[in-house]
Image (cartoon, rainbow, N blue to C red; front, side):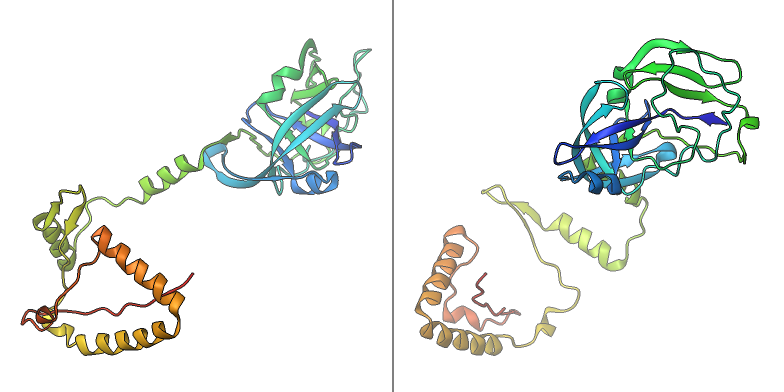
Length: 303
């Protein structure tokens, strides 16, 4: 069994008052974290910021918020300002079981950053690599059979191997707090790369679509590309759409006569279509040509 370094610290709330929190020290994390319940207790304002998180074995999750936090040592005047990502939970209670320290003898002058390190308790904050090495100091003690006692600006912490005889209920468990934050853009790229299918068998319709694209794609003088529409069936089955479209057009015309401002806006919109080349006038003689045609109705829509 191993003891993972933790410390009792004070977090400053929205009114400037200090609240006791329990922090886990992790040099393998690229970010600092705080749990939602601690954030609520401190009353701090969080900022929306979606950040993907990658852990051991590429286990992933996403945090949607971050918050600025000021922490202070329980034993001295050390203070630091951090930005923490917000999570519902960082880990289970640490340590996972009670540790019997009744026979332990600490060197004189050692003041522990967390005097209750031997009792399972929730972790409120995770302090990552950004601050981990900043708070380390040179003094350390290595006692046979016990974890390393390391001095920090938060006072002494314990970390390292522990013989299972010191624990009341020993159960082999493994925790890894390696955390890597990645850009959402990179995560999306990975997703599409995984989802991309290779050697896909095309259907008859898909083959026809690709063939149409290859044969009927051309670049216009404006720099745009033009592709001829492909029909899945005979154009003769489009039917007579002219009369239906004309009736709806006349209905729209009556509506516009009753609403002058809407008529003006609608006319301006259509004129813009003509100017941009999205629409061109058609004379009456062209309406009844023998080749199949389809007339789409148009509506005035306000947003």
